[in-house]
Image 1 (cartoon, rainbow, N blue to C red):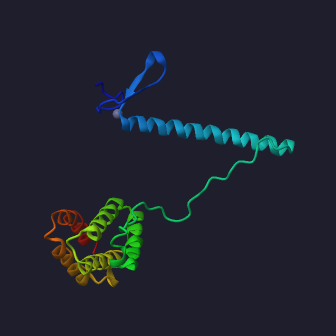
Image 2 (tube, rainbow, N blue to C red):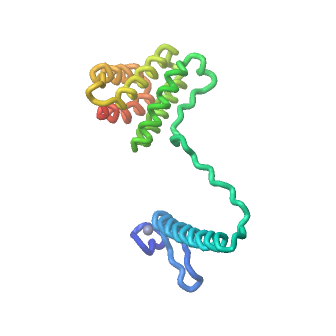
Image 3 (cartoon, protein in one colour):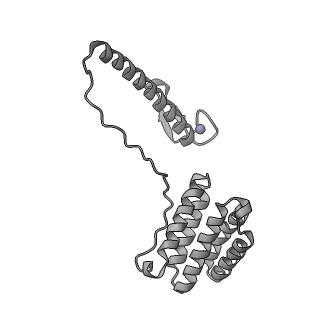
Length: 194
Ligand SMILES: [Zn+2]
């Protein structure tokens, strides 16, 4: 393996003209591509601008109408909690909705990793066969409450209630290894936000 021309990482792609090919790592190659794309977009805008001028002066449309790009207006989140069909009847879907809203806010607030971890934890809880529906709902409802509280201004936040909810969730999942591990990764961050 050879080194990247720009940094000390291993190179994985080769590009450039035949007689002076250069090797880059993925990160450097990605940056190079971004530069190429930005440059091309700049040229496209210049061509568009010149064509606009020519159309305006001549009064003749030189281009076929272009499809308008689709712009997503709403917030974009991929961290939507998926509840399996087999348990969907026993889980409070309103609470899942509320969790999804909070996860979206957390993602938009820049903590996408936390949002993803909470999604994974919630899905694991709802799918856990050794938990009763009551226990699952208890975890999901308390989690939804904690997340809502983290989004509130500090002076209206029910901090002590939220902290005991965090503790209670920890108790419920403490005997299940996988859930316990997931929760250990999340709970300090939630406590930090309260
Ligand atoms: Zn590199």
